[in-house]
Length: 400
Image 1 (cartoon, rainbow, N blue to C red):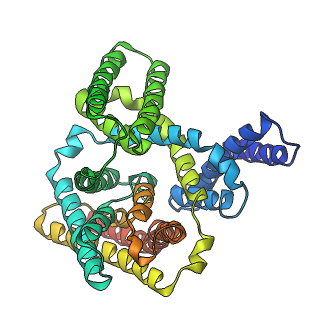
Image 2: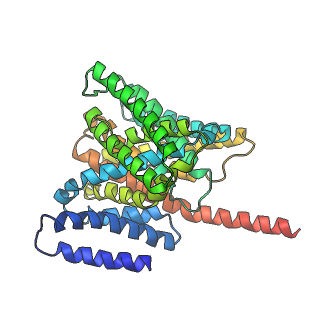
Image 3: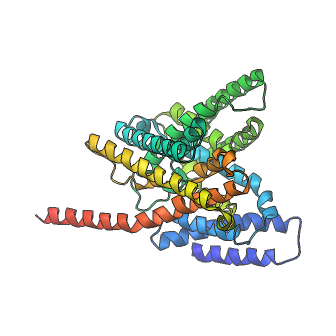
């Protein structure tokens, strides 16, 4: 019934787009398309047994690269997407519970995966493409990142898959922030920046105290909605991504709350609807058409980055599994690269190789298509076959 309602709503929105321009109806139609299509695509993919984020990605490609909405319309939706990204960042940050951070088994696997991708990618790019040591280091750290937003929707779901991707991404992102801190321009004088940090800490504590006094989920929802809005405003003042600032805020809240996780229920419940919208909005801006104009050297750079990222993570994970008594069963989602890596990758490309500007946007699209779609589709039947063999072994053992 819900799917039929979404299909009806989609038809109504398509009809509205065909009507005369309206200062009210047109923006509402654009927001509706951005919300309905990714959610519908995620549901269709889940019904087919695939990861729902693949359906959201396909819907985003239909919205943007296929021309359902123009670039002008997508630019007008940027504030709504920033708010959705801030909400997702809060959810990802709060998902890193203290129990996950103290799990040595997950930490060893995440650290080995990040180090393997960092070393192999940075050394290969520095040697084969004459990339400077600093540029190679940054690209290696980006290769260490995972795709927690994509992994949230990975099938089959296992309890350690999502936290493992969060840990891997957090380790790589922390190292990347340290490397880039020297050249970061906050756009604020140092006293104002210190004041902003103090206000941020006070806001985290105020949110904690307020959530203890709010007894209902609707009240907590409004509290986190206001916090997400403040994160968007702060990210624009500090010139940092809203996803990054809200994720750090969510992590601070997670540590402050400790084992009391009930207050985060509205975040996780709403994330089920917001995550496909974020994935679809990101995919709508990918320059897929530009892939046909890339040179042979640019394709070699992209393919080497992907190959070394995958090989480095696999080598690191296999080493961690040999040293662990109970390694994670499903570590294949760590091979994905998602929205965060896709956002940072074009910014770190060396300009002297002709990779800046339009080629960077095309390489970004290639990275998402390879590491967000092609690799998962290759791993999907292999993982399903392994699960079938594992279940058969369990049934045989139980019969004995």
